[in-house]
Image (cartoon, rainbow, N blue to C red):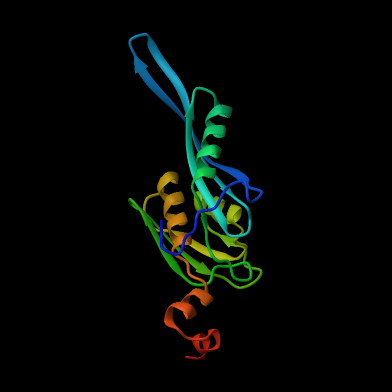
Length: 171
């Protein structure tokens, strides 16, 4: 966990969830094939909190429920500034690399697939996103969350530098 991240309790906020990917997994054994389902879910409150989780079960609904429970256990909070992110940020996980940039009002979420799901559920309304590495949904989701957790608000930057918020934007 990054130094600017605090622990968030899932009971504190009303969380929405979104299914990112659902895979049918097959295990071959002596008696034949055994099918199960693997789900990747993101949860968020639409106000700068997001988490992801994975679940696996024989039934689709059970795998989604397990994934939602897992996602609620690792929530991350990040700063939002007027419906967008405070600054450009690069996120990385495995071979997945993502770039997110702040956008002006009315732009919307310009990002593809798994990245769009994470950004929408977390409450970002205007952002430009580009997935540059692996297109594997697991890696893209984790890289996007990595980029979001690295974000710092202007207030944090000013405090870290020991200057006022006005001085930060002057020079």
